[in-house]
Each structure stands twice: as C-alpha cells, then as structure tokens.
Image 1 (cartoon, one colour):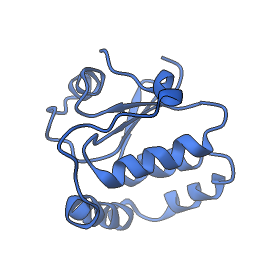
Image 2 (cartoon, rainbow, N blue to C red; image 1 turned 60 degrees about the horizontal axis):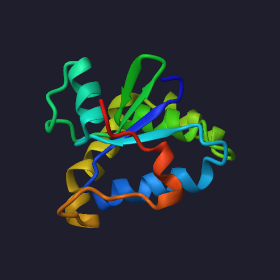
Image 3 (cartoon, one colour; image 1 turned 90 degrees about the vertical axis):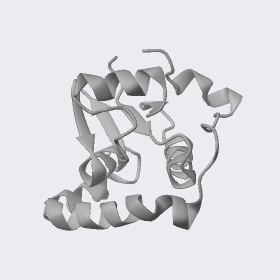
Length: 133
C-alpha cells in the first residue's frame, strides 16, 4: 500500500475524533485508516512485534515503517494542508513529547470516554478504511 495508514483505537472517543479531524482536512485522500482491533491493524502490529491488544498508541504506518506516539502524530499532522508547521515539534526531545502523549493516552478513556464497539465511519469515508489483513 502506497498511502500512509493511521492505526487508531477504534473504541476511544478521542481517537475517533482525531480520525474525523484528519478526514475533514485530507482533501486529497492521502491517508487510509484502520482500527488497531481490525484484522488489518492486528496484522501490522504483529509484523512489527507488537502484541495485538497491548498497543495503546497511535500508529502511523508509512513506507514500510511504523511511527508511534508523538512522532507518528506529528508526522501525520505535518502532511495535512495548513499543518506543516507541526513538524517543528519533532525537534522537542522525545522524552518530553512522549511524556505529554503518554499522559493523554493513559487518561483518554477517563477524560473523553469509550465506546463498547468500534466506531463505524460515514458511508462517504468507507473507501479510505481498511479492514481485511
């Protein structure tokens, strides 16, 4: 797959909101999306030695590599129109960036809520979501 893929927690309200944020700004349909819980998401996690169900992070899968936590989020943001400036934050040391990221990730269900089942995208977005491995 040539398009970068965003792997997200399909039951997390914050993660779903982030996906919708990208969808509304990705006018050229550059990104593809898959939940971490989907067969596609599990395949990518296994490919990189991550036990499915143990990853509580955003994953950007691009050009055969994965980028997680703040690095993945910032690399993704920098590819959206009007958000190229976000790559400036890659200069911040990872222990600081990931410290903030981890704090939010750890509390995301408490602060933003959680669904019982994976979120389903609107019909017009179905073609950019991957399910099968």
